[in-house]
Length: 104
Image 1 (spheres, helix red, strand yellow):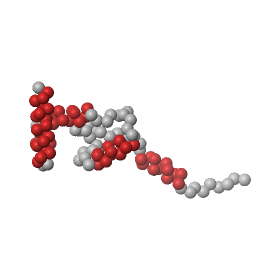
Image 2 (cartoon, rainbow, N blue to C red):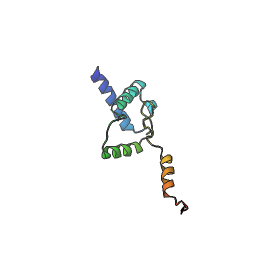
Image 3 (cartoon, rainbow, N blue to C red):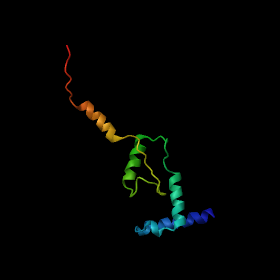
Image 4 (cartoon, rainbow, N blue to C red):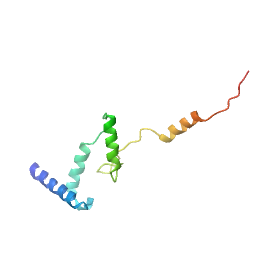
């Protein structure tokens, strides 16, 4: 059974790669669910440590995705770890020149 399923998956993927015009709708639902499940199983999970090189590779690959912010099931794949606007606001305070009168 596993061989039959693997063969079927390989054939569907081969057709998609050969035509280069495949859409989600052209993949049978059962095959899509299997591929989506496999994609999520091998995904980087929260808490996994990555080297700088692995992070750079991951980001460069995400840039090429049509939906980089969700997994194949539609769930969020990125979680904001910092609020960049708050950081900018804090650093702007330190870079402004503030006049503080001297007291004698």
